[in-house]
Length: 325
Image (cartoon, rainbow, N blue to C red; front, side):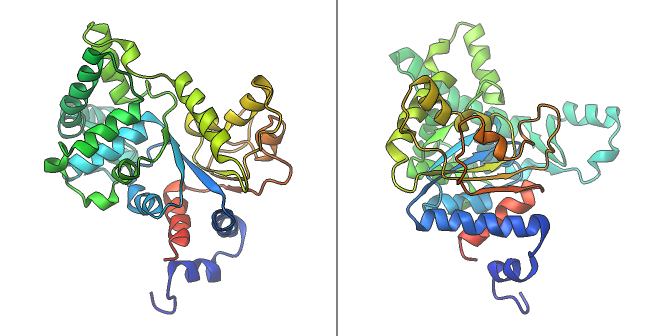
C-alpha cells in the first residue's frame, strides 16, 4: 500500500473531516462498544448482498463482531444467489443509458437488473427454488413451522448447494451466519422473490401459509432475545441503509417499554446509520438520530453517528477497520 501499512492507517491519516471523519468515529465507536462487552445488531437494507458485502461481512460474523442481523428477504436470498450463480451474473456499467427496449431485452434473457448488476433467473432463482421447496414441503407435511432464515440455514448446512458454488464460500455471509447459527430477523420477508414463490404454493394449496413463521413472531422472538442480551454494556445498532430492515427491529425497545410496561429495559447503547437519504417531510430513513430519542429508542447519552454516503463504499471500510486490516 505504499506508505500505508494498513487500511486502518490510511483511514486515520486521510479521513479527517465531514463524512469520512464520521465514518472513522463510527468505526471507533463500534470497536469500543465491543471492547467494553457490548453486543451489536447489523441491519441490511437495499441490495447489499448483490453488492457482495459478504466479502467483508462474512469475516465480521466469523470473528464474532456481530451478534444478530436484521435484513430484508432480498438480502437473505441474494447472498445465496451470488453463491450459486455468480458466474452467470452480468454487469451493465452503462445502465443509465438503457432504453426501455433494451431493458425488455434483459427480461427476455431472464436477467433481472439491480442497478448495474443483472441476476440470472434460471441459474439463481430456480436453482434455489427446488431445494427450498423440498424443505418447505417436508415441514408442511410434518406440521412443523420455521422462520424464513431457518429454512435457508437448513438448506445451506445440508450441503445440497455445494455442487453449485461459484464463489469462494468464505465470501458468503449467509453461510458464515448458518455455521454460527447467528440469529437473523427478516421483517417483511413476503416482499422477496422467495416470499413470492412461497405465496404461489399457498395459492395453489400445496403448502399452508402457517408453515412459515410470521413477522409478528419475529418481533416476539426478538423481544426475548433483547431482554436476554441487553444487560451490561447493552446492544448496539449498526444500520446499513434505511427501510424495514432497520425500522422493524429498532422498535423492540419502545414496544417493551411502552406496550409491555417493562420500564427497566435499556435503550440501544450505540447507534450508527449509513444512508444517503436526506431529512425531508416524514422521511424516517433520513431522520437524524436525535429524532429516535422522542420515540423511546435511543437515550440522550447513546453514542450516535450518521454517515451520509454510499453504504457499498463505507460499510466495507468500517468492517476492514474492525478486522484491523
